[in-house]
Image 1 (cartoon, rainbow, N blue to C red):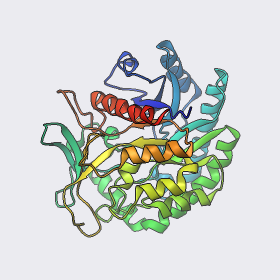
Image 2: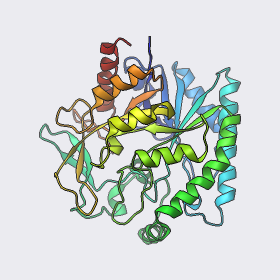
Image 3: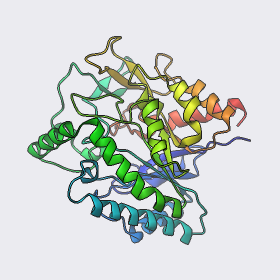
Length: 358
């Protein structure tokens, strides 16, 4: 039996849903945990132990860490870069030690990204679809949201908090840095941390940029199959892998997500599944307008059943989760992470695999 393990995402602090709610999602034995961390600082062993203890109290294990946030100093190669990289390496050591202390054998998994400055980016924050589900999206024809509109910014991809002036200055720094500057920073980072990940039996899965195109002049680098191949070639190692997120990659109409999966699946560490609908056929200076939709949407642009069949046929066994989904039944969408819609999406994904014989 081929078994891709279903998992659900929760936050290490401030999750709006009690752990008991996650226990009610069928098929989930281990959770994926987003660590609300201060970029550039060590995640101490004691904090990792607290999270693992909390999970264990309700019978859960830890499937994937998502994410130990990479600081903008690393991405921009600022003076604090090496100090922040060493802190990241120590965090990896603490993670490995915490898992081993519980008798849990590796490999252990981390999903991370190298986006900046906003991580995943949206300017449509609550659009109702025809069935009145609350959806996130991006439309280059619409203005940028001000920081005051985003509220809890880490939940919308902002790992660090800024004033509007600081944020605008940071955006300018990323634009000046450019794509090759970010590639230089990513290469330096991977060459520093992958040897530590290997020692700790950790598989690092880099998430593609979301959306997978340059946004209003902000450079994006991990946005297609060629870029993902470039990533794994920087340090050839099982510890240097990919988080496959076809919903992110599909925001760029030039991407063939089936082809990417066919070529790169041996490097997958973790899978996210989400669906999108395009709001216009044409692009707008290399950007596309789209809306996130529910996983089984037949009008969506992500061929989820075909992708899961491909991975099943290949013998892929990595964990997976239902990613961004609309708010449903009056539940807060929590910026794409409404519990009800994600639970429904995960049941849909599990049904596909069971239909294939898993």
